[in-house]
Image (cartoon, rainbow, N blue to C red; front, side):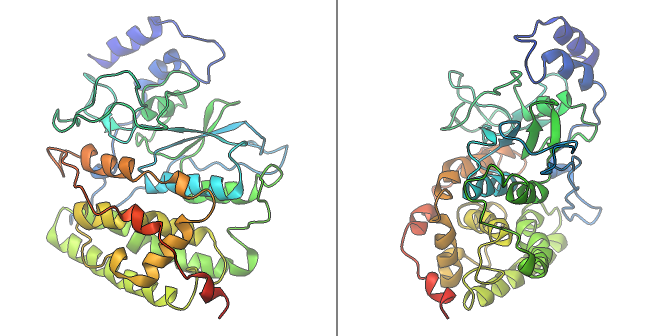
Length: 378
């Protein structure tokens, strides 16, 4: 279907409620204006290295009633995927700060599907369909993949079918439809899609409503240490696994896996002496690190070829992961089933038949006791 035909079809379709956060009409009006739809798989340099493009929505919620986006209870909504480590950051922060009654959440389906069949080839996040036929991957292979996993829900506001619909309703011009999305239900627009900034907003700007406002994930006295840790963990570990997995040349992969291995060993050395990565306090740096380490055993070591080091074989890092996993509220943000479903079924270029490896039940390892508290006393 040509874009003009799609727009005409959608404009003529009635909306379910004039009070919705957005309508199919607004999606249609913006669909033709959006730049070329793309995913992270399209972000590569001439040398074959993966080059992640920065997030494009960078507004801030502030604890100021006169701000453009003031912190208010039940005004903001998070669109997330259990599978996505960037979105997982926001889920953990929301949980440990006690913001479950303040900021609502919708979890999308883990397997990317075509978002505009017949219009273009873009694949991305879609909403679960509880009574729909099982999915295959976007190339028509694999499965049967359930069309709904636990906690997957339809869009609660405007009946969007995909995260792309959410972006186009906000008149997005960038064309990369990623999660997390922090949505303003009042202004009916995206506030931010940058996870590192969303977790800082959740940490500090909603303390008037947080159950655990005394928890500061970015304390003044540790900010320089946290920033320093983030400065090398992000490029070599968080993004490093993607640089390995999405590399298109041997040279690009070799650079990425060398840096990742060196940083993994550096983390091991730190965690042999310190309970947390930036000292004795649990901080945002731990959340950012944990979500990647959690996925290394079952996904990255196989799918992204990061098989030089293993969390399960590194006692300090394994116990560190256990410590965080066992904190109140964290376990509930983890769905290894959806993590594996996403990676192994969303990229036919990397896994044509979407075969999901059985694995060794890494999450069961995380439920075993750990001795990390002893490091805080030394």
